[in-house]
Image (cartoon, rainbow, N blue to C red; front, side, top):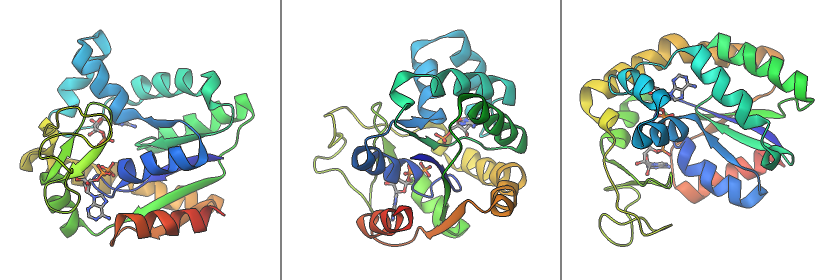
Length: 212
Ligand code: ADP
Ligand code: AMP
């Protein structure tokens, strides 16, 4: 199954992606996680990306297109893949179509997790992340042990871009640069919208139902 998980920052893409990746046995490809790993490792890509990420702006398209192209060629993607956080612009979506045509793996579905803006700010400001990609929330999805990841035992941290100023910028960027993709994929007829409000397990069940 070749899936794009779509939605605004804080919609719950990462939360659902980890569950889906385990359930369908396909790799979870989060461009945000790939960029953050590069920032942590101090690579040239990480240094370039950090400037944009810290202020809530998008990293340039050509950088992301290169990352996604080489990642989709990975042998673990042969049974399918789950993209999270890509595409975010029309040029990224066009590039994805071209790459997938080249490798003969068309998209099956774009799952749009729908959450209104007023809920997103609370979700993002209370988010706590682990380096393994798992995300928690101080109130809505707290870890069993305070500050410790349930999945790997790693220490949880607050992302630099989960501070108020960057959150506002990211929501603005979503509405101007990313939201137009709803029309783009709607016209092709492969977008399914899921209500992202409610219990995490219930949303997961809705997604699985939509996929089946
Ligand atoms: P995204 O990957 O779309 O940016 P995340 O999966 O990281 O979003 O979720 C953002 C925040 O919202 C996290 O703190 C997460 O624990 C929390 N969250 C995810 N799903 C829900 C939900 N259904 N209800 C309440 N909070 C949620
Ligand atoms: P995320 O983890 O998906 O919230 O992404 C965190 C940040 O990484 C974004 O605010 C952007 O700065 C950058 N980023 C992640 N994915 C992309 C993408 N597809 N295009 C451009 N920038 C991206």
